[in-house]
Image 1: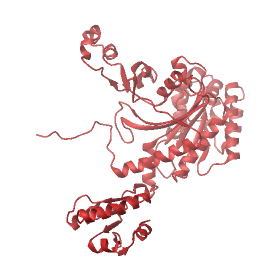
Image 2 (image 1 turned 90 degrees about the vertical axis):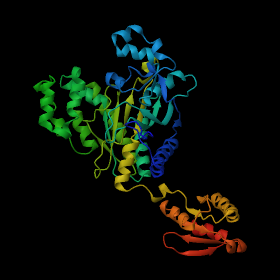
Image 3 (image 1 turned 30 degrees about the vertical axis):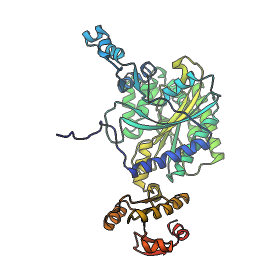
Image 4 (image 1 turned 180 degrees about the horizontal axis):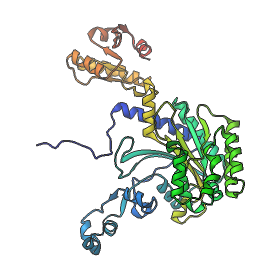
Length: 456
């Protein structure tokens, strides 16, 4: 009995229309990356295990796909680990390579390994697939693409300003208006924790604060109490719970809350600088919003934190994010290499564009005209015309077999090909073509130059 075909959970096949739509997004992002001066790099699909392991925390390590060593790997396995059934020791002895988990750690490895060839500041972009042994669910896959852009070797805040412009440029190109670019700063969060006497509980404090929109003020306070944050500290946070208004007014409120924290004041200065620059430069369709509850990536972000929200009419998580990190390459022994980077969530952007009907009709454009095959003489005559059409950027093809005309016409309909050309003895004698519009049914007898005009 033949095996029923299947693919691994968390992976996907993409049909021609889906690939065309994904390429539309890829091309928009890639075009903006290049316009802003980012250079492309690519890294291998798999890295040495010791490059990846220990860089994402215990949870991340569990989600890394390991690759078994080639040959009789069990024969070379750590005998003691095998006997004791110690999976950690056993894995390290039978697997020396792993599929990349993200693009950031491979990028850090690339920078350190090629530091003598790179001109800093180095602006790179990377669009490649990554793999995670995660539990598949809606919007979460085991194989997916990341679209990253980073600048390393500069502490200048003009980089943050440029990344906001880059987000705005990409989403404007995709006609995705009403996107909100949320920004915060790790120094603000550290300053708030310092002011309320909870510097040692920064993560607990920010995790609770991050839930303000979801569970409300009282529940957030309850969670903070359960994490050991004092009543006095929580009362100092009160202005934070009612923080509202535009960017400038929120900055003013933060100044009064953080007036005793040097770290907090530094964060305010950085945010104010970025906002003033964006006000002066302007954005096309996106909006910049200060969100002091934004706390993603606290384990590695040291300055600005970004998260991009889809238009309010769509129920979707973040469609992009990033931030400033001061020691990306430190994990490979290269200290003091500051950087900042952002990422675009391709799959979520796809879902948003689909829901809002924002994919252009031409994005799935395949064949514009099909030549009906009546036999070898007619086919050769048709292929000469097809050659000219293709030179004029018209996608054209010949049906490969001299099948019944009804079958060929059905083929054109099923593929939504808008035009069909019929060539018989009369057409060959008069050097003309019968063009049929498959939507209206109208037929015209035209010369080759007119054929090009009609299809274009």
